Length: 136
Image 1: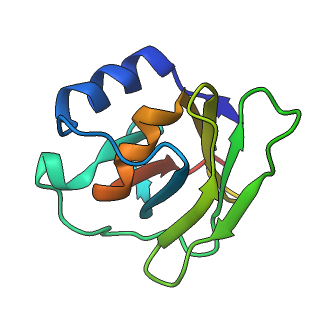
Image 2: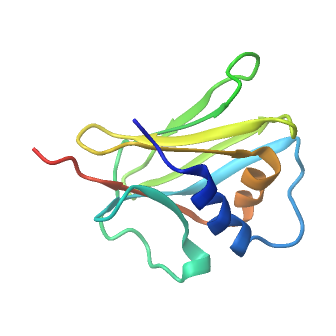
């Protein structure tokens, strides 16, 4: 699995977030996983005016876990036929960083780790995760 540059993702997220943050104790992320043609990454779909997935990735594993590993539980789900997922709500520590990842056989996986308050704001946004196909 490839770890996406967190600084690049953080800049994208910070540039498009609303001024108020979600409750730090309740973490939920919704969105879709699509087949992408570029480098794998995360896009706030509604902020960029993107349409729905043209090529949804069905059955992709989406995982949310504390970066520290130790005490927090791993939360995971799989995407539906339209590539959509909802992960959480899960109790979160606002002092921790959490890693959101997506992977599917035949695709290059992606992972990004962000502080909990920043990730929690995605509850009100539509997150699109793009996975490029691996070359055979």
